[in-house]
Image (cartoon, rainbow, N blue to C red):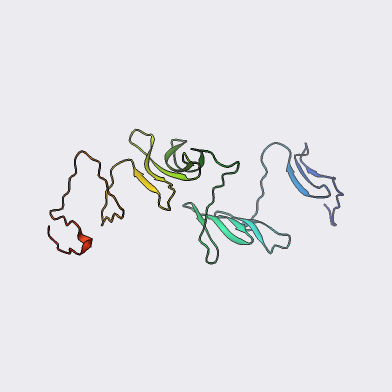
Length: 219
């Protein structure tokens, strides 16, 4: 039992455990808490939460609440919080929340994968892929393609939609399967090409050249 402060000079370790399993020390430049033995390092509290912050407890870096959330902060502003259903990501004043996937390395080459968002289901003790969003460079290496994958009845992930970057501002969209439009469909372009064996149209009335001033409702 100590009734006064205990002083440990630089590089003198306070050790705990028969084999010095836990070590606390300062090397003159930095402070260390080292789990040097068997088992894991646990930090517990009966005060409701555990927080990491600055020395004056004025700025929070991380906060973990008993039976509750884990929060991450940037410059004392909460940015991420776990919930019972997932996570909440918070932006700032007049700033929308943002998730950035950084491709760290040299300038990407052709057909190079830049990032993937994978959707998985923990089923029978194993993580199974059920869909993903993939971003990669195209053959020119200066534009990107975005591919949306879904799980087919065969159990494989198949490309359902591809957005292909073009030299112009508008990308091309390619659907791998059928496309169902429940509302109105407006097609804006110079040329519309329908390349099918059979074209079935259920509408009884089709108006051609409608935008030129012909507003009649019948053919």
